[in-house]
Picture 1 (cartoon, helix red, strand yellow):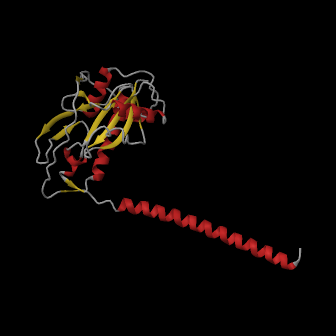
Picture 2 (tube, helix red, strand yellow):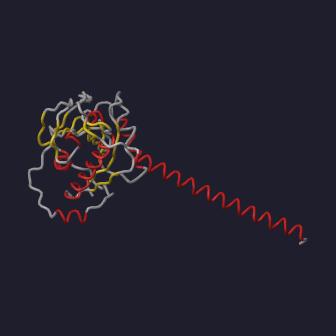
Picture 3 (cartoon, one colour):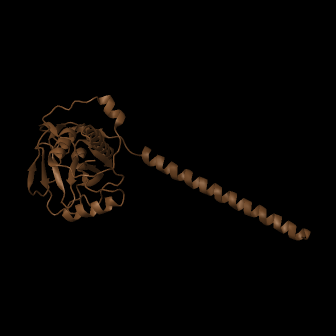
Length: 262
């Protein structure tokens, strides 16, 4: 090859290498900027603080259908807590439908309200089996077995009430969930937040609501293990199918899980 061509080829190779190095550097910078942006979005979340004066909130009135009373668990639950925590894991086999008695025991141990007291925030403060910011408990629990509409759990009455008009949404979410795992006979457990309850007491309340949802899922996972049930929290929140049949902006879907008998 002639010297002029060699020089040209060498120059082209150097230029390509420089271009590749620049592209790699730009990609690295973009990744870094994205991570910084993500970190900053976390750091920019303001700490919740109690309001100097309560801002009373009128709780959402759910459409009510038929109510089904559930049986509490009468028998003491004898277990080794340390041993239970050692074996607890996500279980994804839902081979059999959950009987009403078993579902009642699960909700009794994971979600029930033990007592309530009036508050200046518009809704009662409750003492449930799991903690909540300000004892305000903004998380509603909805359940839907195969082919049925959503039913809302009442922690004070230990009962399930049909949510009228929700059958199509329950079916749609079951179909979406089936793309992620084999739901089989599992019962969908949906978490719906009512942020206004928490906002009545706290400024910058948003993270408190999400943390409350996480607490509920955590308690459910331990109770399911104790009762020898399968329980799998999902990454999706259940939006929009947990709330799209309701004419309100007061509620938000914040979690979804599947519960079943293995």
